[in-house]
Length: 296
Image 1: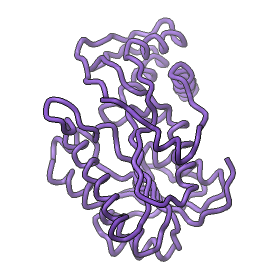
Image 2 (image 1 turned 180 degrees about the vertical axis):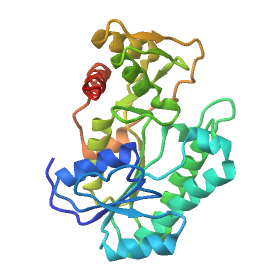
Image 3 (image 1 turned 120 degrees about the horizontal axis):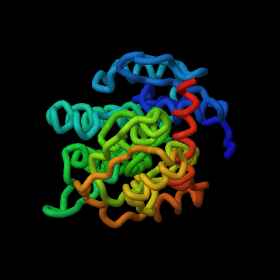
Image 4 (image 1 turned 45 degrees about the vertical axis):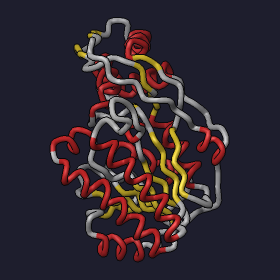
């Protein structure tokens, strides 16, 4: 999907799995991309302007964004589930205060395109009708803050709730096990799944495509939406892996991970219409092929 240039785009957490993927896509679309992360842990994506910084330092981030003439923001920087569990105060600081800081940068710059990742973990569920972990609680808070920010400052935003994003390079976080299982199969290694259950498995290229379509909009409010709604089981993941790697040594688990609550992406479909989906079988095939190639 080609769109007119929307101006320099700032990607926080730009050196992470999803940050690198969306940055590469935006460069391919002819955009100027500024990637912000704590430290250059790997080579920047080709064509991306790499900046080192901390989203907790709002004045430094604002000055940097102003210097680059930033006109759109993709906010991905966050601490993941295990890190939030291990250090709740730091998780709240980075995930909630950091989100506020980026909204404030958007407000000061007059940014009308602000896309961020929430999570299915933000959706309330049993036993208390709340998110079931701190990461989800922080993300739910960020969704509400984004809505209030629009009421107070008319800064529009789109928050997307992925579930299990997988694909080449997704190797950190609790749900990275899907990618790690495919990688193990490609290398002839044993892998034990840490959980069972049903969830939405979302291949990285599809997620990036959705984010890009959202970024092309100037919405008239603060929207939040689930990304996809079709759930599959871990047993189906294992079957898809064995389809491309019949000798795969993947051991299932009897520890059932709670299924996400009712999923609804009607808001997203109203915003961007349809988009090409990537099936679990195709995503596993593409991921497996990547890890086979990477050995040579």
